[in-house]
Image (cartoon, rainbow, N blue to C red):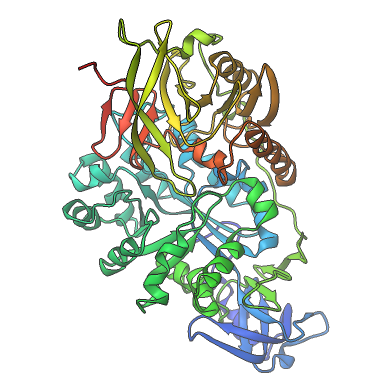
Length: 600
């Protein structure tokens, strides 16, 4: 794996040898620290690190002989020297930021390597969008490796995307310099059933010698799971309980366990290590989805590692799960993930391995952040007009577009309802009795309306259904063009007129998130790039996102990170019930079902 912006180990090996042998001064020496060795799971007091050409040349008790007149000396002052943190599976678009601004947000938190799957933008802009994300990623002062998205659409026949990814697209992307493998294979039924298209994508990746990402979002660990593993996916992040983590590891997969803005899956699975005593080498930490507010206020991979420690994990094991385990999984253990000779000089200085304050961050041998402040530039691409203005409704929407007619003569109906589950990606498939007024099905205090508005091809299509769990009250609506994974527009509301106002507003600004109540806009987060991202600084986006969270609460929603729940209601590869532009989808059977059950 090469990076066009960073020299390979063979290119600089002569320099590293000269420094280690004392025949050439190091560019930088970190002196007097505690070496966190993730290979042996040790902490070794009073060690130094010598750096040359962005890589580590020497680690040992005395690098004084590597210091020359122009060598930068960093005094560790007895602090721990640990590897920079790696996020094994994530979507930059979920931060509502471009790769440059995402990097700017997470570098001060100690993240120096990210493995990103830009399948959000792939659904909107296709291969061209993936290339834009890939190219900006390679400009950054930290390591951002790109996984080529595998599933756009994620569930063929059950949703319509802006673009479709083909095996030919995957094969082409495998030749790009920053591509590390195939993004999460969400079409797990397709793999289990031997779908030729899915197997062609996996084959192209394996022939390129790269890693196939997994996504098995089913509690059934029987024959379909066995068939999926046999198909080639090497990891999975969709586990929600201890049995899921154990099953993946026993079958030779890596269990990627996430703590995102709304996904709290670490505590339930880490007991496989802390209580069952299984080998932790195949247990990897990741975030999957973190919005800008979480990044600015709470952190990134440092937050995940702290949480794992709080859940009873040994600090050194937790650090391995966010460094060497991740690097090994992607075949990069000789390139990064540890503080050892030849590896990229990605290093964190911290005074406490449990609380994990990130006091200094070094990436590729350069100080990139100190005491929470970034010290380097994160270059932007000039995003083209083709990546903007992607919200096409076809016509201005009205309240009538959000009406759902009842069967003739019905006074109430049995409706299939999406049930939101706090802090988890899965939903519940519920049924409820809903009232009928003037021939239209209405929500209740507990159940409000949800609509999926087509926004890629200006068809004017609106799919209406019902959702419970948000707790909204009064006349309000929330709309978002972030609607994983097809990224049409999701509108949730208690009043059809407010739903129309919110949808039309997002068409006006080119995408984002908005909340209306009683005809007034309470919050707006503009996301002009593909309707998914802003190229504004993370602090500005986070401030607008916080207003959005506050507005949701003002409308009666008390769920933790309810926005993330909102944005995944169209993800038709995670059980149990989802909405798409083609209808209501039961993900347990991968079949469309009626919103209103037929009268008996």
